[in-house]
Image (tube, rainbow, N blue to C red; front, top):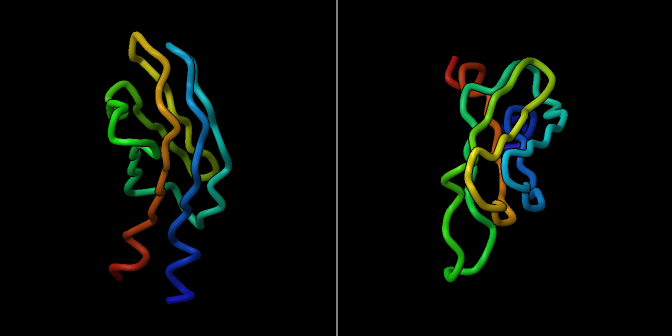
Length: 85
C-alpha cells in the first residue's frame, strides 16, 4: 500500500472565483491519467460542475468556468498506468 502513495496525490483546495484558476505541483512520477474533483462541503451546496482540470508532468491546473464561485473541493490525481503494469 505504501507504493500507491507515490502514484496518488490528494489535496483539498479552497474555492475558486468565477472564471479563475489555481495550479499546484502534484509530485507524481508522470502526468496524471485520472483527475477526480469532488466537493468537500455540506449537502446543501451544489457540486463542482464548473470545474475542469488540465495537467502535465509537473502540475495540475483547475479552472472554474461556472457563473459562480466553486465550493471548497478535493482533487485526487492518479498515475494509473504505472500501477496497472
